[in-house]
Image 1 (cartoon, rainbow, N blue to C red):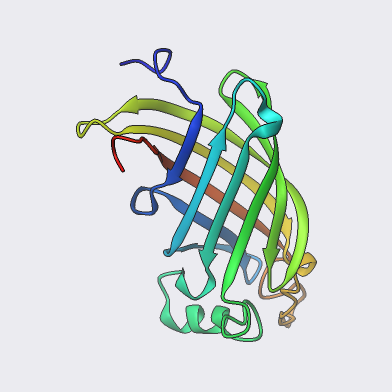
Image 2: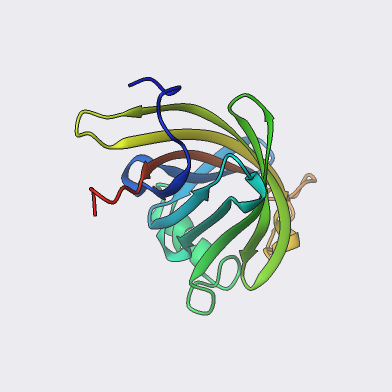
Length: 187
C-alpha cells in the first residue's frame, strides 16, 4: 500500500524502540552535547477532517536521560537540572495541530518540565507512512524546536574564566518519531 491509500485517521502509539526524543546543547561554548530520553510513551489521535480534534500526549521518564556519559547523566538527574526524584516525568500535551503544507504540521501544546508548563509550537514533517513487513501501519515524523531552558526552571550554570558559560541557555529539542497505528485487529 502507498501512503495515499492509507487512512491516517485514528489512534497512533509512539514506538519507543524506533523513536528518539532528544536534545542538544553547547558545552563550554565550543562543542555540542547530545542526549535523549530512553523511556518514552505517547499517543496521538488524528482527525484529518477536523484537525482541531487531533490530540497528542507524550511522556518522557526524566531519569532515562542518556548523554553517553554516566557522570553527566547523574548531574542532569540531580536538583541542578531535572530533579527526577521530585519531578519524574516530562510531558507534552498537544492541543492544536495545523497543516502548513502537504505533510508538514505545527503542533501547539503544553510542555512541562520540573512542574513548569510553557506553551510551545513544534514543527513536524511527516517522513512517510507505510505498512511494514509485519502488516503494521507506521508513520514517521521529524522535527526540532529551540527552547530556553531557564523558562523551565533549568537554571544551573557555571561561568567560564574567559567569558561565557559552561552550558548554553538555549537547548534544541530533537524529534524522530515512529508511530504505529492502533488497529482493532492488532489488539
